[in-house]
Amino acid sequence: MSAEELPPPPAALFPEPALRTQVDDLLTRTLTAATARVLRGPVMPTLDRARLRAELDAFDFAAPRPLEELIAWTVKQLEQGVVHMNHPRYFGLFNPAPNFPAQCADRIAGAFNPQLASSGSSPAPVEIEGHVIRAVARRAGLPARSGGHFTTAGSEANYTALICALTRAEARFGIDGVRAFAGPVAMYTSRECQPAWFKIAHQAGIGRAALRLIGTDGKGRMDTGALVRALAEDRARGVVPVLVSATAGTTPARMIDRLAKCARIAAGEGLWYHVDAAWGGAALASARLRPLLTGIELADSVTIDAHKWFATTMGCGMFITSHPQVLSEAFRVSTDFMPSSVTQLDPYLNTMQWSRRFMGLRLFLSLGAAGWDGYGAHVERAAELIAHIGRQLAARGWSVANDSQLAVLCVVPPPESAAIRDIVRRVLDSGRAWVAATTHEGREVLRICATHGESSLADASELVAALEAAR
Ligand SMILES: Cc1ncc(COP(=O)(O)O)c(C=O)c1O
Image (cartoon, rainbow, N blue to C red; front, side):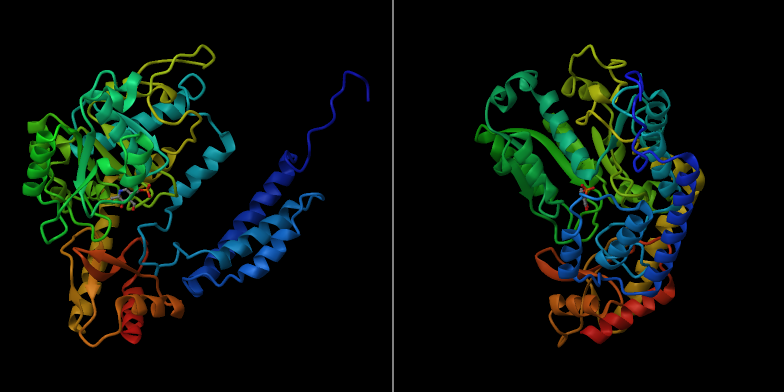
């Protein structure tokens, strides 16, 4: 080798095109076969962790292994080692079976690996993401000036809402932090909110004690009278309220706060009004369910997770705001090394992240392929399936504890049944279905959520039979 020659690139990392195609084909066939086996098998993991750890110990990364062998090994671990969200009897924690266009999007994003920090390096992806965000904003009825971005998840979107609220409430916040406020800061949401708000308050530096958990009205919705009282009491004590966050689809029971009423209260107090519609936002797609979200159009900002009821692959949240200039204020930074620096356009100047994956392509392809009507049919089907399960269980003496149309059912078994956590454990042990125990309005309930777009009436019957056998 002459002094001017480089060694070849490591073939294991950068194989030649023909080999890539061969491995790609093998991967596709392996995944198709694995998915077919998953559908026939238990929902719960069957993993022997001791065996996995022993096998992992053998990966000392000293000697390379063939990629085909590694792929086969990995798919086997996932087949045995996860709760199967792609199983139609996973009635679980809001994690969807991923839709196919979103899976295609992940392949495209992986192949091009665009850097979405700036429009200079990724003009097409930045335009596509912005277009989808504006389409969802319009669907929600937000003003035409609205903007926003895709986030890693709902938690990042909610965190962004708090940062925007703080930034708008006090001009010096960006420089001096919470010390800039005339008193301790507080934010308001209901006690049935998603608990990541505690972490958000911690991270943002307002402290966990700043999170006011407002009581609910007996149906899981924020008690607006209690909200008004909490605001007045706090102001009287010198506390500075900054944010009201209503929930459109609470985590325990998917109830919807009185969005328009909360908007009026927040506006009357001059506060940033956020709607956390991480799950419920997908109802915007359905003409029938859309009215449930009336009032969302009054929000200063909205969180919607495409990786929940829109059924994209994981890590596809959205933060949408009618004040995009506040994002530019909160996330501004000055540098000369980025390929472009356009205020209100370049993601690294308007979001928490710097390097960003092309997350929004998942919703672009799925919304493009299904259209709003296709998504409307998807969410309505889930709502109908849950209503059907509710009727089946009610006929067997179970009582329904929530009044949600957002494809989530909270039920209590008939008297003399086993404890709810024991019923859940038995159902999971049986591998026949996946359900959860949770607390709604201070009462333990069993929660069933239609997260799989292909769950059938036969799957519902199997679930009901599994619940009856377990109680
Ligand atoms: C209402 C609500 N908000 C926020 C979140 C957090 O979203 P993520 O898990 O995407 O961070 C959830 C998760 O279930 C949720 O239900």
